[in-house]
Image (cartoon, helix red, strand yellow):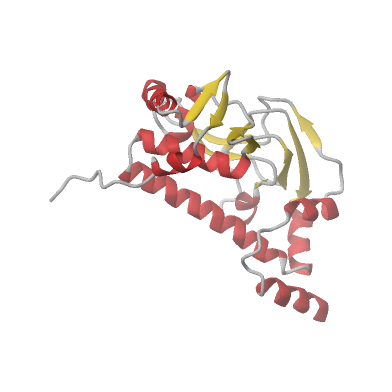
Length: 238
């Protein structure tokens, strides 16, 4: 108990430190990472959660199907991300969204029972859980602000800038986002029609801020792209 208290105290003094989920799953995952082909599902909306998922390699889309049958993308997860925790700790006890692998993936899992046992025996990991929920909350707030206070062009810039910072690979002076992103996929993630997204993307390409070729997004000027994300007051004046 004293050791647990010491570890929790040490973690509380480094609240700012990002969680190391790779080390966590190296230590606690009892099975090797499972391989999923592109287009696979980890779970579906309404499924009962019995494990948490850690993305070791690849990219996963969280989405929901609207009443009109439209694919509404919620979030993009990549290497180092965890899925399924919210469903495990929620009162409803079911997944609210579905998943689709956008690339081939390697996924580690830990069962619900084992995860809760780990948290009870190692309370410092609750800080990592807090980090995860704060990150999701920040994303939800940014997305809400984007829908209220910006247009589709700014939301696209915000989405691509976020992908560049979370997943981007440096290629000289450029940053390449290492997963296929067509105009349609980008439109799905920012809640716009493909035609609207294409107009905004073409403008960014014309300004030499980005290039999209064969689904590969290359960021030529991240600072200019981030400026395009700035919130403008689009609400009607009194």
